[in-house]
Length: 283
Ligand code: PRP
Ligand code: ZN
Image: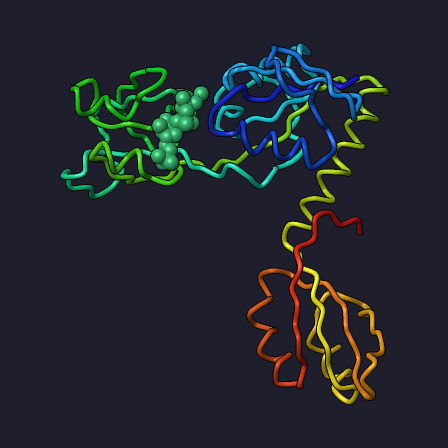
């Protein structure tokens, strides 16, 4: 049994729940207790505040955890980063009142900065030889300049709308963050085996996320040309169509290449091009 710590609510919660579902860790619905055992995978889920997840994983209360890289870096707990999960992207930034003129980092000299991330901030200030006063607050950091608690803030920015509605502007991005999977440093053999299975499943989803399944019909004399255009597949699948001299071609393309190759394909005489999402992909 592997115990996985995830966020009870907030920034990461929803997407973490989706990921668990996609990898086949289903939870009995209804009651939201602190600890729930999955009935489809040898794991139990421990619901915690994000701030508590790094420590819970470090001291073995949980075996692994899903948490923001920002929280993990701030807490400086001894745990291993297994992988970046590619969702809940945000950044930790310095922001100042909108009407202030900003000409560089020296603006912060002798200023008071409110934050819930004092360690990341002080490391950054030290590295840049800025002397500023750090004012630690937990929650609603963004209102502190307006009520005179600080001159600036250092906080999580995602869409940026919190800054806008508090008349602040982002002036320095200090760190980029996203959800990460962390693990206790000394998992036993059984737990490690379950973790490897979990990683295998996450990889299958991450590989599929960027990929699309493509189907198209084309005259047989364009086949060679089409094989040149369709990247990433050693050998696309080709089926003869009922209509003489035509074939159906199936392949996999990367989302990013889509618009680039679609016009080239049309020029070859390809028709009825279908693009279908791929749920999971094992290479
Ligand atoms: C952060 C931050 C802002 C908001 C920024 O809080 O403190 O309030 O997100 O997001 P936006 O740029 O999309 O408006 P979060 O939701 O992470 O909650 P927490 O700090 O209380 O954990
Ligand atoms: Zn938090």
